[in-house]
Length: 232
Image (cartoon, rainbow, N blue to C red; front, side, top):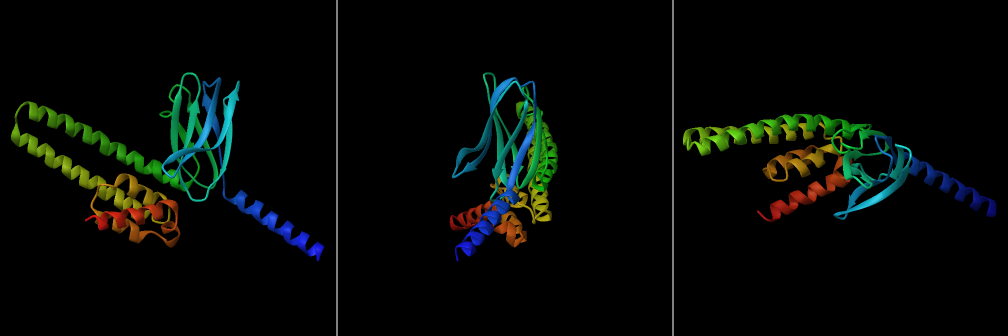
């Protein structure tokens, strides 16, 4: 009986270790120009930013951080030294991520490799940058039109702005629906369409696979939609 108990315990421990290894995320990389500082791997838990791993670097600029990922979500690589206190946001999930950046432009010059959600996030952000550039152009044109008291031009620019905003919302909705098997879909709904028509959110929510509906952002999207409809 004792041998049977030991065998069962051993199998349980092996299964537990194997399960944790499968859900493990490794974040490694290089920070060019770093001499000394502390790196933190962080995420949002109950609206609070918490650290799940950290490493102090002194004389080296390479790092290796690890954590167990329960559900793919946004993580932050934060640096804290005498000159900088900055963060890099990325879509973390099980597997290995490589993040390379420079100390002077820590959160702007970085490159992330790893994970399908991050790949799709990069793709979406590239298009959103184009929308943002166009929005800035229209804001500048509107400012000049108002200053010149040109009511016709002001209305024209405003109509163009509204049309651009509608196209942006539709682009994000279509992007999320086309990637409904990934956690990026409910994340985009929550962060990019939180002030859009609830019908767009419904469209995304209904397209999600059962697995994604049960993910962290899938559950949050479901709650968010219910709250909107409750207050209508």
